[in-house]
Image (cartoon, rainbow, N blue to C red):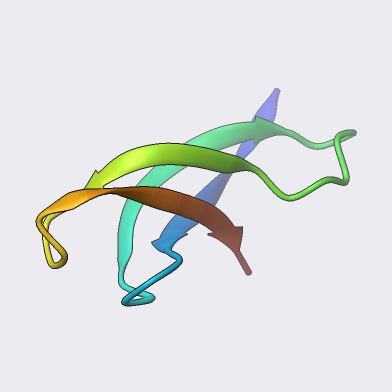
Length: 48
């Protein structure tokens, strides 16, 4: 069972998305997503 993580835009640092991640994976998640603030696709990283 996973736990919720927040994804923040690398450019504007807004927390735009939430998702679930496996607890045993210690690496930070990175996904290309659309940022509503920047109005373009940017890398979104997991935040604490």
